[in-house]
Length: 110
Length: 114
Image 1 (cartoon, rainbow over the protein chains, first blue to last red):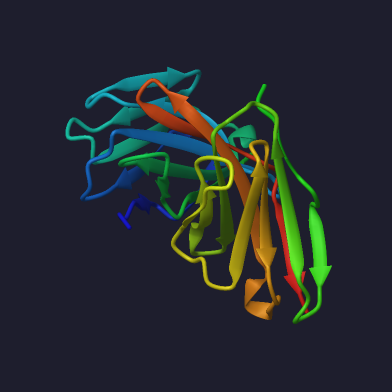
Image 2 (image 1 turned 90 degrees about the vertical axis):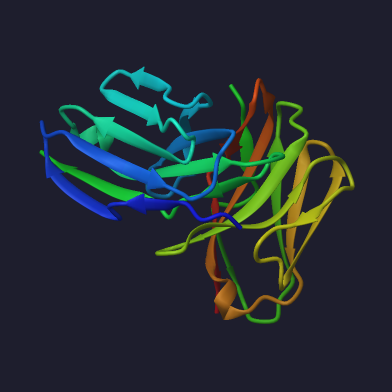
């Protein structure tokens, strides 16, 4: 099983601050996905990136796929309390299986 | 919208009981998955299925079995529940979209084995 490492594991910030979450692996992925999970619910897909160097924006969230397709980052600008949740990255190598990182628990304090 | 439903949100069972967790998806997805999620361990794949009556072991299949008799339904079975199977169980489905398989999750079943 390929390993996907996320950092930081926990992040607690004030409303209005910026933050970046990292997802790294030694494996090459054909695609990488980011999910957000709220307490007591299943993860919800935020974005899929498939091309090395690709950047996608979703309102205040910016996702980047590394040139070598081994790493990715999620940047949140001006974080809000509604951004609080567990952020998971997941890489696809072959077939339909995904390898998930352990997640970054983000808390945005008002 | 894709909808994945799980039969129970919360379940309490006794050690040794046989436990059935049901998952249904309404979007005709060919792939379905069962994960368990534990603090500090992330999502771990138990079993998955890429077609009716087909199943593949994931990373932690021991103590579990699955059944997929219909395309929309994927069941996880704990033959004899044990306390170390207390966990959050998540079902997901996916289909091929361009070069990726995006997974859609159910709300989860929090299982407690006493």
